[in-house]
Amino acid sequence: MTKSDIVTNVAKRVALHKNDAERLVEIVFESILEALNNEDKVELRGFGSFRTRYRKERKGRNPKTGEEIKVPAKRIVYFKPGKELKELINKS
Image (cartoon, rainbow, N blue to C red; front, top):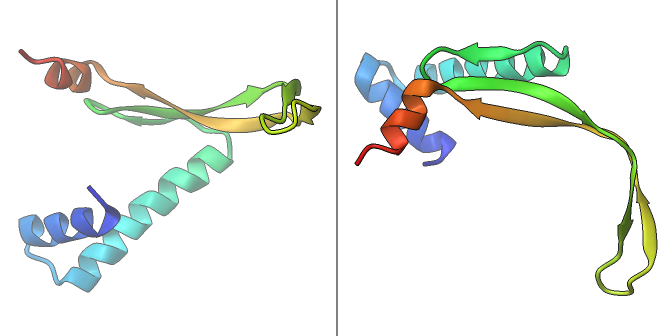
């Protein structure tokens, strides 16, 4: 499913013009990004939660040459699925 598919689905379900639905989806995504950038946790009950984690600096290897390189420290986004989402996905 793409962002465009989500916009189309929202527009149909809420009976909005596609441009309005697209703006609504953009606002939701921007809100999530802003919260994560501020190191806040984003929790969507029944779906899951997003948070950022720090990865330490580490040594890596260039797969082509085998040369050792330094991988810098960075923040990554981590998603933890909620109980309802896990149950839905693992439904027999």
